[in-house]
Image (cartoon, rainbow, N blue to C red; front, top):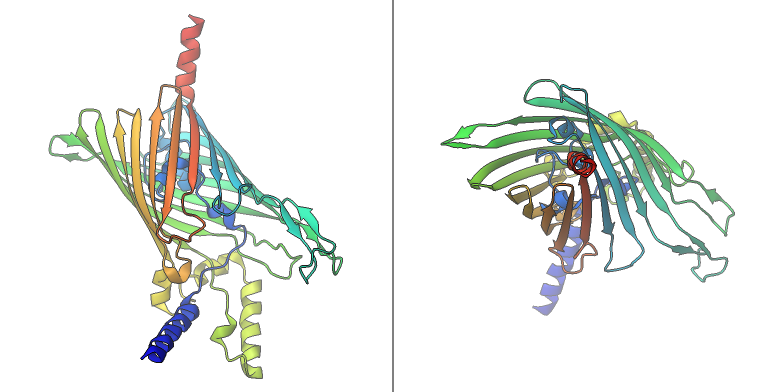
Length: 395
């Protein structure tokens, strides 16, 4: 009986290993949530109310922003259960244009430090070891405009640099930094239906991010896809009482990146199987990003069932008292076969006329997850509040 139990457990592990097939991309740090508000609702933001950090979630929301402009700085200690020198810093802002209040420009800069890394020879004996400080950053500019009283669209242009460069002390080969360019396209719709005597707000939005060139960190041997992502979301906000509102939202995300071929899906014990694998790999490696977007909908080895597993969902809520105090909670789910990065999230915020401070906390469903207990902080400044404050001081 004991042998039977062990055999069943071993067979189950083999099935899990065979089904585990996450989508591979380059510059994966582009997918990390930068701000505390969105992360506090379980990575939610495609259709929530516009805020300073809409550049990451859905830049077309800026056209509906209530303030003339804003600026925000966010900081995230990353993988802090393992190391203490990896972090993500993000600066974002926007400004409304013209007197019609129907268009805006926006920008953001994100910097991800991978800390200090020591590399050595292939034997790992520390001989010829060198210390490097790899990092990745992205800078983007965006423009959004209302196309009607209820609908807007936006576009973002982005430059990306991934500096993982180092010299292989065994072969002498120098691996250089890689750069890429990408575009985001987004749309946002919002309306204010009357339910009973209460005016509510219903919104939906989409964002296709990181449509761009491929990137290589190994001098062109492997050409990785950027984490091109389709985000669809909806949000419903309704009053609970005077000065009290509650918003509930849902986001769906899918990477528009083709699945990388795996040797285990081919008969590698035969020459025919090896040739088939390398042909599939070369096709994947040389595939254009646009072709990869369309290919990503029907190329999973497990068929349509596995394609559905590639969809992540985030469900979250935000309680708002008079635009001054906020409580947030949410849940993010990723299928175990595609990475299993599932977690609960909690957050809070406090706002004055000029400044708002937000914080969020991640609680992973797996106790051994390195993402467990991740904290994020965002400090935002409202330009209308600053202008009013300066005007009062001048008087």
